Length: 345
Image 1: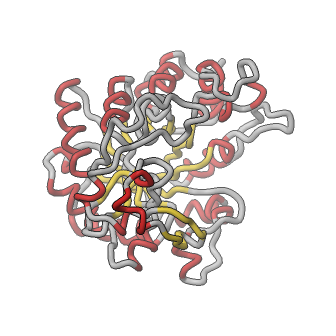
Image 2: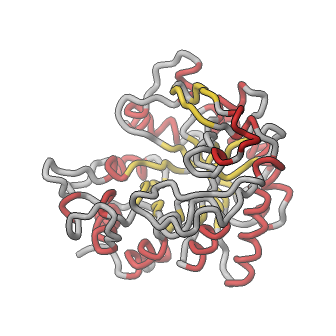
């Protein structure tokens, strides 16, 4: 059997976002230095068609846009994926305007804010160039796992992302051969991408179907009036359907290893085994090292902001024991330590 660390992929969730503001070159660089196999840029669109790394199209929570008097009139309310959101939105700004903004920490209550204002927003092209340079410097391939955010929403605005994403990946020598996986919580765009990739013959790009919990539905299904929900997609028949167009699934950690009523780790579900039976890989999301996000029974002390490496490693080990093929973490150094120590006894 191969060593665990050579089989399971450590994915830097928005970069090393426990240490630097998410989706910045600083966060991606820290993640690579800490041993991440993949870095994850979530992608949204600018008004003039640039792909920007942000977790959502609303900018107020993670940038200083509210401090720019010139942009005050652009605060508005939108319905994004069926939810009313108030703020400033990426598609109301050109790339040049977005470049005047600076990033700030998403979770100031629990994480370091000393880097607020230090870093600009970055495009997918800048990320690819940065990763290519870092990969050459460290002598190992570094994968890129972009997520298409709000696919239906941007398509309705006349800013479809799928073909732009494929064209950008094909335009750079690095992403024509390096490991690339495209993620989406929607279904139709992954099926479309599967067809486009089959026609292009590009073999280094894989597809990952992201899954939420309960009776939530992919928004493209909602928009089309469909009834498919994530619970059905995680059932054996649903997994067989996913295997027809995707290479893996991204599932919440609690869908892999649930918790007891006391907040302790319970026995794994059958999800990983069922997915593997269809040929799908399983990536778990998201491991965060602070007490706030670690199962309550694994807390160190009572402060939610405490950086709890041991608790995060224990949680990762539970999912490794369940057989996952990769995992998303805000702290890739912690994820790498979990792998280097092997799965739990």
